[in-house]
Length: 560
Image (cartoon, rainbow, N blue to C red; front, side):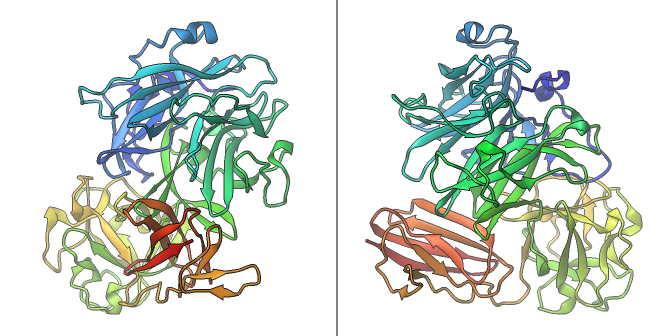
């Protein structure tokens, strides 16, 4: 029931103009219906709706570069599509990509606007590197198709690999709602004898773009409601429900089945971010990177990639563009290892902000106050004045100072997480980022705005200021049905560990590794009184790792 307005036909071919206000990400981050972000070697890739399937890559999840090729050469497509989808014009919709069997599998949609005559196909390549001689996509043909108005419309595939190794594809749009079917991981096609199960929507209602993620004992189904593809007039928003079974039923926070109109709001329009849609999740270095598109209200409704943060609270996910919880931090340059410092340490208005050697003093501590959509007011702990771009300048070399809060764009800063856990900081008044010019390692060098260069002198580590740790105590305890603790090891399969994290309101990362170092569980969330972690379902010896801003704790975990 969507998706090929004229500007989408050339989406992958043009670099959209950048407005004179900071926005998420940099470079060629135009996107509509982005795939789940996927890594090949040191690069991250996204695939989007477009002629031939457009691709872009990034080394750090911030700066994006258009791939020189599309998956299928523009204007060409596999011949089986002609019979399956009469009138198909080469614009593939909503791809998704997964790595298995030593290859990358890309699932793609073929349809025409508003029609239920649709198909999902799959192709494979040994690499995503478009400069490699091995980069060749081999089409494997049709996975599913639809024709009748009541069918699960065969578009918007989202691939989910369960912890037990079983593979599933959720898909669908309007018409018959959202369905799920098991795939054969050895072929990438529908498993023999597998049936499609409807898990949301139906009767022509506005449902599409599903995505399933798992956390603890729950599967969470995200889907879009509303309409896409109308720029700033788009009404897309994301809802979520959960189930203890991959095939449902999925219910919202009120217990309403998503097949009967249920779905709790996960993310709607906010400021420039209009019509968020087509969610995917990449977990990398303990962070949950949520990819989706939005229509930029500050740039004529052009569709762009957005990368947000996902956490879990009270058994439900939340999506936020905030990467830093409100609190006090030190901000350390990744290159020089020096910190933001109100140079002179008086806290007076007009005092310059420079890099200095950490001395655990108040003029080196900064209070981050979220002001919406990933932007922060950053106040110095000595006197409370705000980090300010002098005279709201946007030119390269413009320096920073302390100044009274005026609630303007040169005092609001977009903070974005990179794949390695460091951050890019950009004032809302422009597109240049907070840097240390010339990669200086000299204390007293002023912070200034510079063009992005991927230098470590532009990357910032944001951590709690004191030498103590948010996770000051690790007590993995197995709790039985009556709440009684059974620890130390061993622990039983299918139960939970309760981790007492210490200080609440800090981000806690929990990883579980097998004895050979394979990651089998990871989660990042704001800590509460207890962080609950599922025990692996397979007996053996594991390592549980709990990470916060400045400290890592590891313990052996024996599962029987």
